Length: 334
Ligand SMILES: [Zn+2]
Image (cartoon, rainbow, N blue to C red):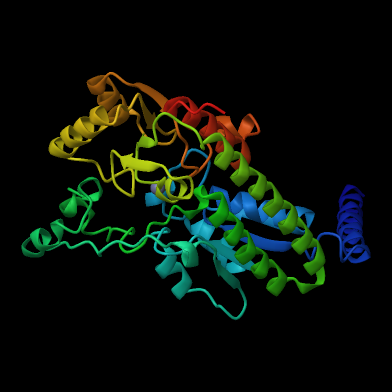
């Protein structure tokens, strides 16, 4: 008797499950599955996709994206996705390996930032005899002193500066690329995706105008940053960026580099040194102490920390906090 009861209950539950699934085939089964590599792309995709997309971000909260490798679970999620959105241009160290194994027939792949990476570098040389010939072409502060450590990793920043998302103008172009991917994978919701993208672009235009206004009249235009992430932003608003470390936070400066930066910073009356949330502030603090400057956060938005997420921070709140830091450090008067 007991066994029969259990059997009946199981059949009922299964029957109910199937029935409810079949009654509502359009409500949850056609959600577009989207994977993004890191936070700014996740934010843009979420704004565009709204309720029609389920978006998974590869780099977790609090992790620095430059050296991050996806987990096996991430890879499976990518394989099952409809749209995969990367920055491109070598920013994701795993781009090549992953794309090689994905079927481009079934997954729409968007390299959202690559076309807008207008700042090029000479490829890094790992052979000692060739190092010296190329030295004069490098900016001193972007030289990397860790050929030995990085040889196996094959440094992923060769060629292009990937930090396009920090320029609101370039971010608008990235949004245009991302929405193309959504429309290609899910043409049924094209008008909604385009409407959402337009609203996002309008916010980016306001952000751009606010930056332009706030940074128009300042006592200094030199920013000393933790790593070489703000070149496109500096270019957009006629600032000059002096990075302490290289294109990746791991590319640390030599003692000689550091001495040179501190001389330059003193000569240019630098009063603030910027540090970032996902990287140790040690170098920025050392330099600030040496030149008698203060430190302030300038967030390159490689990702949010769990705490920032809990506080409801977004691409926009961080960009506006960055603008406050910039106007304070540069003595801007509007
Ligand atoms: Zn970076």
